[in-house]
Image (cartoon, rainbow, N blue to C red; front, side, top):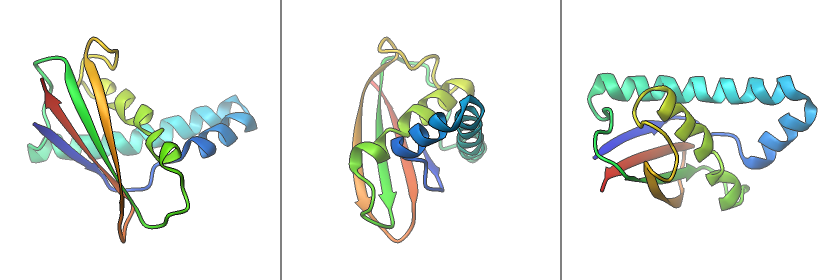
Length: 124
């Protein structure tokens, strides 16, 4: 089992839509900024030994979304998994995020005192 934590609040779908409506560069800039931040968390987990390249596919991915407030809808929160999956591919943790490699997801929203995401990858 592979596990890592993203130690910040990721943008909701509404924030992504608003950035994309601004202009192409604004939306693209948001995507790159968020993925760079996720990449730093993945690199730290690799160096800590809590995550490594997946060898056996398909996988299940569990997302545990910790939120300080109840202001955001669950679907808006969980939409950030797109950024996480894309960065896991970029970092070489998973080969691809297609259905051949990723069997499915679970999402759990946890009311907490801080914003962060715990990602667990389970090889099937």
